[in-house]
Image 1 (cartoon, rainbow, N blue to C red):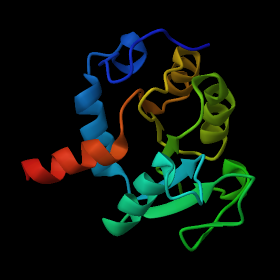
Image 2 (spheres, one colour):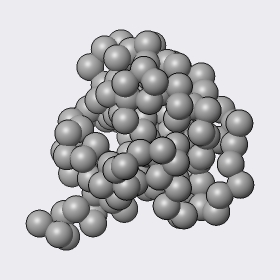
Image 3 (tube, rainbow, N blue to C red):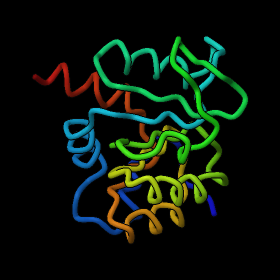
Length: 154
């Protein structure tokens, strides 16, 4: 299930939380140390690589996830979230909206605390699945942009 919401529009977490998306984003980033980037790429023109490079540069522990690569930015790349195991705080999704439900289910299975869907990625079904399992969710936002905003505000 995907949404017809415009990219960048503040859709709120599944449209049912008292916490705004901006507040959720800030809280999640502040509580995150370890990130899995689903859809990581070796291609320097892909947003996933640019964002992953930024996250590494600012000190996050980042694990790339993509069955098509063995390494991304010098980090071992795994095929599935389950190949990482436990210890992931936030799962960042660089996949089509229609592909997010199984990623949400995998995030739950590995004990992640947060599910982050990048700009243009909106899947309310995945959001509801994750929230029902206790994960906090952000949709349609860029973790790099939100982190930079937080850094400038400090």
